[in-house]
Length: 391
Image (cartoon, rainbow, N blue to C red; front, side):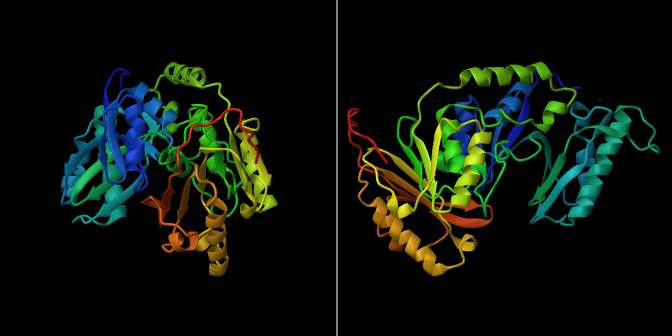
């Protein structure tokens, strides 16, 4: 069975367009990385696996790579799976479903059959290793260890999901509105801005409050996974003391800083939802929320950052209302010369409606919806601390 000091190949999965953000996060944690489409490869120990789950903000899941090989027939698939060292991960009695199977541009394309043969090969390997009769099913009543198999251009990749539920499930969202942004997407957007904790942060279309909460977690250096468990923590070869120590270290790493983070929304019901989430995250004394129309926003503060996920696409069916909103947004933000503004939307005509061309534009995917992240950089000026700063 696996030892804590052994090294494993791992993959942090990411939404399309966010791989570089996840790679940067992993490098900041001390890992060497290899960025690929939809994922970032790295290696480490059991402690590193837990650390990545605990600290990654923009990733979707952390997975262990069991093995890779080529297969163009089901016999090659069976033999390739059987040859892998499953006993390294699966103790007798553990529950090991093939939770996910996919095939892309491969000769083997029947996913249910791929799933069944993979399971059969693993069962046979474990029966052989643990000296169990081939005619007697293996007991699967213990901890869950989800296995995933994918074939892309005939190359098989076997992985184990160490996170369980997606890492965007931080544990603080107790309520949500229509089409809420996932927490890891919000964290990634903030990472793509020029915001630092010493700058004012405003979300003028705050919805359920996700952008404000993620900004606060970043500003406080609070580990995003601190309030949840990961499925790997239930595995017999993952030392509970290691997990406890990492969580204690994460708590000590939190910064005691003053943050200027605020959000507002025209819908009082959404402000109430956002407040419930802020309270659940333990950030009621960090984030200020209020009901307000976007066009009523005024401030004398300088060098602030606005990040907005306004209604778009399926989130707002009235195209005329979208046009008005984006036009009002442009007019309201125009006087804020020192403020940088970042808006994500699927509207390809956003710049025309906003009234300005973005300094930069980045293509991303919010779920399956292609969006652009429009970036307008403010004029940097030296802040005068004695200035009166009011909203």
